[in-house]
Image (cartoon, rainbow, N blue to C red; front, top):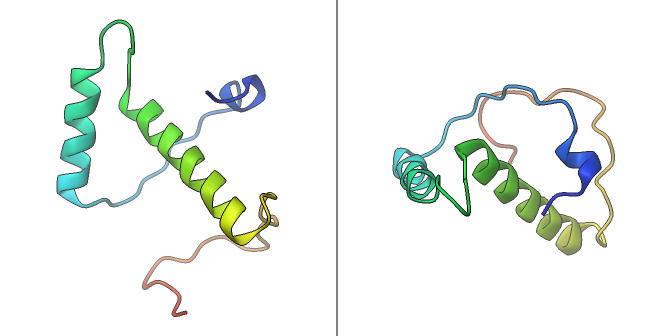
Length: 82
């Protein structure tokens, strides 16, 4: 569960592209779990998934610490080559 500070932060709209099969699975899960006791929403599913993955990435790549604040906005286009 998110801490209260995170849960009460301002919400913003984000647009991103996902594989259609992944989005359909997420929608199916959301509809299936929308009622009591879970009351799942697609936004909450996405938020929880992002928080979980960010925690894993911090642990794996940054000793569990927050990543440094970015100095510029993300650029669209092809991913950066490794």
